[in-house]
Image (cartoon, rainbow, N blue to C red; front, side):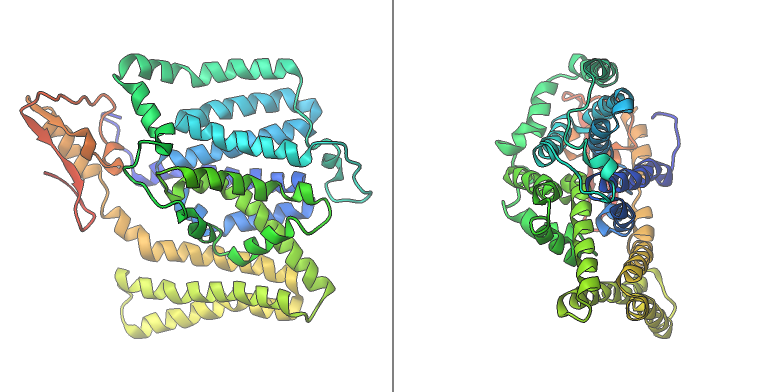
Amino acid sequence: VQGVDFSEAAARFVPALGAVLSLLLVADLAAMLLNRRAAAIAALVWLSSYFLFDEFRKAMADPYLAFFALLCVWAWIKASVCRGKSVWLLAIFYASFALGSLAKFPVNLLHVGVAILVYHVCFGGKRTPSPGTPGEGFQSHLGRAPGPWYGHLFGVVIYLLLGMPWPIYVVTQVPHVREIWRYESIGEFSDNTEKARPFFMYLGDMFKLALPWTPMWVVGIFASGMRSNARRRLFATLWFAIELIIFSISNVKKDTYLLPLMPAITLMTVQGIQTMLAMFRHRRGKKLPSWLIVSQIGIGVGWAIVVPLLGMAIGLPNPAARLGVTVALVVFALLPLAVWLIKGGRAWFVTQAIVYAVLILLFYQASFYLSENTRSAREVAARVTMMLKQPGVTINPVTLPEEASMYLPLNLHFNPHAPHELFIFDDPRNELKPD
């Protein structure tokens, strides 16, 4: 890192690229596990989900963990249905498991392990797909253990080569690292209470994670056990529910920790959308599908009103301009309503997804883009690095925010006997300053 200059945009690019690749993986999972029509729906839901925009733009370990955990699940399931390519898919599985473990090993093991276990429980056993079922070429192989055995042996070698050198280096170079790892992993279920939150925190936040498709996600929960092949349709719901319970038991809670569950939430939402569209086709004029569509349009309208209000912070010139932008965005948000009335449910969904994606982009442009770039920690870290070159000066690692540590040298050492300590902190105005 020393001597290398890079921008925030470059740091955000790689996790953002992971979000784009994840879109393809989620779409293929939907095609394999549900049906081919579900692939396009899953891609549009992924593209227009607020939480994904929020998290995959951060230069943190969690987006990398989420991407490689999803790649693991996709490669494992794909290897069980594509028998001729299973060796190479297993190589992808073990390589991605190694890279995800470098981000957060115990959590990566939990995310991948739960998903694979639930997959085999829900899709295991003999099945005979009904003729003409979309994706039936996959269905007869779902739930089988991927093989052959030498593919796993080859994969273990890849895992050891990719995943072990760095932990071995850290263990030999960093004092007390085993205690640090224990405290930051299983310690969160016992003695690590620094950022403890109540047990029920995620129960409320899970509705926020599915925005703006929360109504369809709720329908997907009920739909997972109401249609034919109920056990298979429970896969995404069980995957989500089991991990939600485990993370609720943990003392330390952040919404970011649930980012790897977004594929499960997306699949649940897809099932809800397909169920709603089926009801709309077969029961035209009935109240439930109409109210669901209206609720989704209402979320878009609410977003359209919020964006210009946030725009006051970035200097929209006058109230008339803000009013004009508000009216234009509300008309844009009502476009799915016109499409629904003219062309029906399927055309409405595509239009609604596009409207959501545009409004979310405008939301971030108005609310976060300028404010976040003005609080970059790069300048502060550069000043701190110069100070640390002076004799007798060290840094207090307890007060080091993640924003600053990203820009500091990797070979930074803490000297507890130095006469002067350097503190970095977040002040009430969220500006990083050296003290």
